[in-house]
Length: 435
Image 1 (cartoon, rainbow, N blue to C red):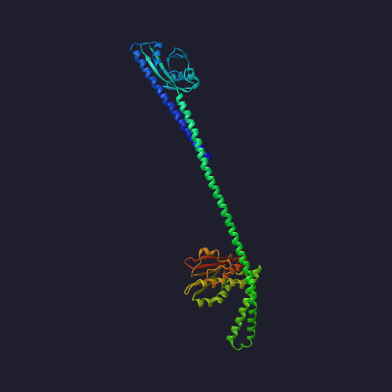
Image 2 (cartoon, rainbow, N blue to C red; image 1 turned 180 degrees about the vertical axis):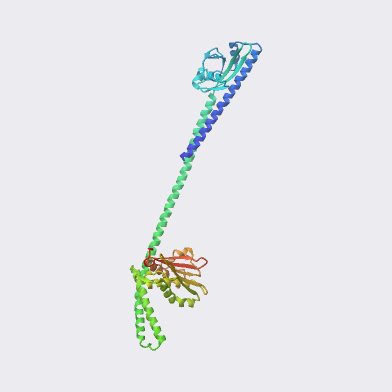
């Protein structure tokens, strides 16, 4: 704001100074013209043989004088003084110097203007020469006019300048105040929005924490309720072993029942450990074995749904540290979620890949796909896009907790053409990655 006022003031001052200088130049030109006119008139009188003395010349010039405003003087070449129309002798250094340099006009300071019988203001003198050939003399006619009117105009110009600067400063102050007021309102509004956003973020975190607590409580309750009938199933299956020993198909079915009940127990124990905040077991797990076990357990679901399932595993992948049952469960949840998102004829690919710094389990499908709005919420407990009664919203949340407990990350993104891509990233056993 100050720079704007200074610029406007400087511009107005420059314009006032330019106008004042132009007025003085105009006055100087007028005085030079008047002096030449007087010189021409006196020269014609001399040529006609009329008044030829200094007094006669001055008396002839007296008719154009105006007291206090315009004075006429005569100077004989080589004379150190000037003669006024009243016969007085005065010295004016600026005029004499101008005569020596052959100038046609000169500015007289206000102090010397008073000595010439003019108002104490800056004056301007016009100079013209008269040759008296008959007497062998050269005279200079000097007309001196006060620049009082020009200086008054300059004074008013300066007053206008001051008023302009004050008006500009007032306008700048008003608009600057309005701008600062609006900016303050914007800052206050921005602060309120930021506080509201922070409050919303805290509420969302609290809600997620509450859901996680509910999930843990629910998991422990479900585990407790399942353990009793699961124990009964295992006991009955063990009782059937001697009775079906002679039938290979039946004995294989009983063995499968016992194997899966044992697996369920291990998964439940692992999930309960996660709910209690326990660290998972640290076994060396082969990524290809995780994929094989997961695919083997969900193949029947894909066959029933008419969805093609492909498995791609890189050779000689480094091992990962963790609980094999929990890791299998995480991959199974991703596969089942992909299967549910597909229709008959769609494809699902599960891959195990990586290097010395990272192991990745990738599940990609060509199904309905996930929206960008749902990517960030896919790992939240109880969040689901499935119809009511078709999903609990816990599968991906449990997978996320399993992966996090193994120092890994679970990411979701829309597929390149369609469908969804889910990626589990884990550090290799003895690797340098610490997520």
